[in-house]
Amino acid sequence: MSTIDQEGYRNLIGDWTITKRALVRRINRVLAKQNQVLRKTRGGWSTVNLGEFYILNHYGNVVDHHVDIVWLGQELNVMHESETLAV
Image 1 (cartoon, rainbow, N blue to C red):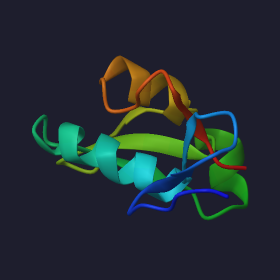
Image 2: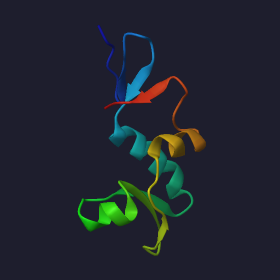
Image 3: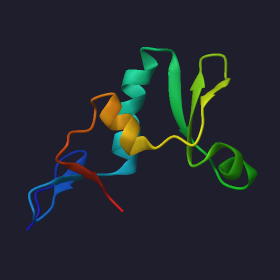
């Protein structure tokens, strides 16, 4: 049986699983201090050009594209080593 909390659940191995939405919210809390925001593309040509996730600054300019949210979450220390992303 798994234990459910606000942002994810613990799997049978003992690792915590979090959703993409929860990870994006954690990342955006840190990026907001730098006047940036992580966004998800809606599909079509934007996914080809920007990837699934991209970062905007407060002027609306693209700062980074094709962002790997797991890597970024670990770099910003908002994702613990024992956490995995839900599929």
